[in-house]
Amino acid sequence: MSAVAPDAGRVDRLQVRTILHLTLKQSLGPGTDASTGSRGHPLRQILFSMTTLGVMLSVRAWRVADLPSFFVLLFAGVFVIVILAINPDSQDVQERRLEILASKPIAPRTLLSARTLLLLVLSALLAGCLGLVPMAAAVVRFGLSVPRAVAAYLTLIAGCFAAAVVWLSVLMVSLRWIPLERVRKTLQFLLVAAILGITAASVGWISLGREGGPLF
Amino acid sequence: MEGPSAIELRQLGKDYGAKQALRGVSLTVGWGEVFGYVGANGAGKTTTIKILTGLIRPSSGDALVGGHSVLEQPLEVKARLGYVPESGALFEKFSPVEYLTLIGRLYRLSEAHIRERMGAELRSFGLEADKDKPMGVLSKGTKQKVCWISALLHDPEVLVLDEPLNGLDVETVAYVKEMMRRRAQEGRTIFYSSHLIDIVEKVCTRIAVIHAGQIVSVGTVGEVVAASGSSSLEHALLALSARAAPA
Image 1 (cartoon, rainbow over the protein chains, first blue to last red):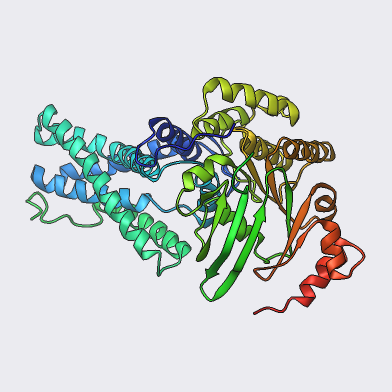
Image 2: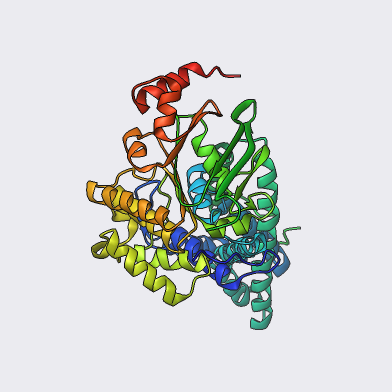
């Protein structure tokens, strides 16, 4: 008995869940990375580093005069960090995943749904950690109501997902002309630069408009 | 099995930029055959297999599995195929049991069927002691056994093997050879790509020799050796490769 081919026009929910389980545990779960040989717990590392960066972003609340200025800086900072952190996998990892998943009877719609959900989970994880402390800071510093803070938090996550979708589409097109490794290294460099920039702005090395006045 | 051939390659071509990896490869493999696909490194073996398994699209021609086209009905083809890749690709943060269960779900098998088949294959491959360890800490040979089980889980009609014995111990190689013969007797087909000539000679009912993207000889081992005017398959491969002039 061989397997039964799925209907090409339908999304198979069990396959979507299975692909998510496989890729999320492989990407975020504890263990030894096959490509680098290093042991670690990527999920804990992301939670810690992104929440710390969120604390840096929240310091800005006391360096600008009003809530709109703070939100402009917060949304811009989080969007930049999220899209730079979602870096395409290396050639080796992509080929290995392709050999496992592309040789299975998975309908294109199912695969697309799984990839979209995966991107949503990853962008929500990053934006969620980055935005949590700054939203609390907005409540404390500017008297933002909790329901509005929750709405702004969800908007931040949805915006990051949309930005990540657009950014990945641009990256996929750019890979036709630019080698994958060059794209990966450039993104890694830009991510470090962005983190340093956020840190510098938070501790006051970079001016954020007129001190005590509105940013714009 | 009845009806169309197990595998049919029709004028298969694949270009990587200016390089022609396959140049009009045509082959027919019947049900119940252990078919050897041999050639030097870079001859086009892995490219053929990647097209058969739906990993890449051909530049020209078509490949059919059980009468289903890889271009028109890729899901039907993939449901009928089991594939053991050369790379031994796995999701290494999972244990064999977790990984195989998830692979069974990707094939849309029932949980009872997955448990039954997985249990039997784990015993056959001698993997029971390692079945709950993360695969990242397992040896290359043990990981290759997991690759084998993941290809056999849905009991495929056609098994496509790309250098499948890499890293396996003597006992497992003996078991695999016996299992391939048994599956062929049951009417299933094995498409076996390798450069290990001695195993191809012992196991395969027919072979095709590929050189520079073209089939240069097809037949039983005896027929290929005789057609080349050589005394052994090894010498036949060398003679056929030397004789075949690239286009």
